[in-house]
Length: 481
Image (tube, rainbow, N blue to C red; front, side, top):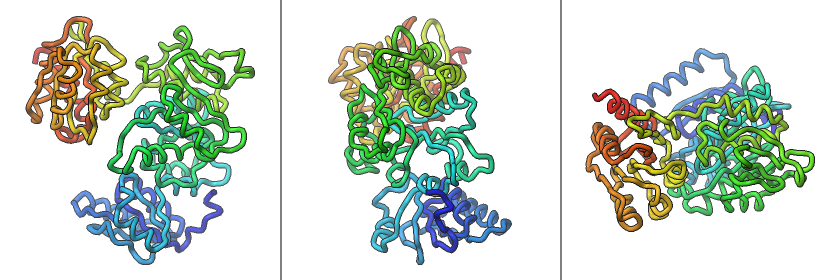
């Protein structure tokens, strides 16, 4: 539904969270005449500054609605409340939502509000989710759409808040929308033009409560799709989500594969990305889209990302040449299988973004032989399958971080002959020591790979800072510092 069908005037709306998406929702809804109360449990200086900034913006603006901020109490439902809008990170079992359920008040996310605020004739959404690769695929898709001459942006879980984008003065032609499982949980009425689930592996189970609940939230992205549900043929769970989805008549299931594609699939043939889904005769024809070498970097899981992005773009009617031009123009974000340097014949690669075992396995599959730097916060992960799959590629392993013993024990069970350096330190110099230890294990032709398979917060502010520390340590090796 578009905003012309919804009356926000004088609605009492509670916004949970004083972050980027919460502030965006508060501003937009108050601008439409709602009375908004933002609640947040925090009372830090940063919270107080944000609250003051939000209040000042409304004091200065001529808006029909109002905004008030309540800090220090994230559990109690303000009265009256007609609707709760949550930020993605808030858990479904939060006391605020229990209070809302008891009062019969609907809880939705900022993405749902963006969907409801879309004006008549608004841009279609091409949506992407999955355990790993979402951001890269969404940005690849935006690059392809841009190469096709369309006004677009990569949004959702990245970039500009979706609410701001749908209300932009200059309308978009189509949007490339990354959606997390958190966001999908709170987005009941989304109906995408086409959508992709890239892969499915255990993640965020503390938030969702079970793998089944996590998968179900991912699968919501397919509900009501009009043209194509894109899935990964190597991951049967993604196809199962397509089969379970209630889609519009005529919507097609389109697979992507790193092998030769069958009808209604995109895949790889002799170094080429090819399309057998969006061609006049998919049983006899294939359309060349790009070369594998056009994908940056051409690691297997990144080629899969490119195929998924291409499938969504082709579903929207984009020409093959734009797929090639978009992939050539695309530059990956930092800390995603990023080559830092080559020293004495050894390549140093930063994949600090590999914060879980699924992402680390994809990264480890891209190289051989490897000296692997791993460890951090495991978040309940187990490492036996990861170590088993990578064992024959490992020259050596350097372990860092709080939960490194879990990886060391898996290595002892499944790769007992691989040398392991266990760094029992979490200070700021630990990464430098790890890189030096990795250099000592490596031989010419090897790759030293930071793919931690763990979160970073035991030692670093975030995965970006961890990757920067790795790159700084490698550069220090190069200069002999």
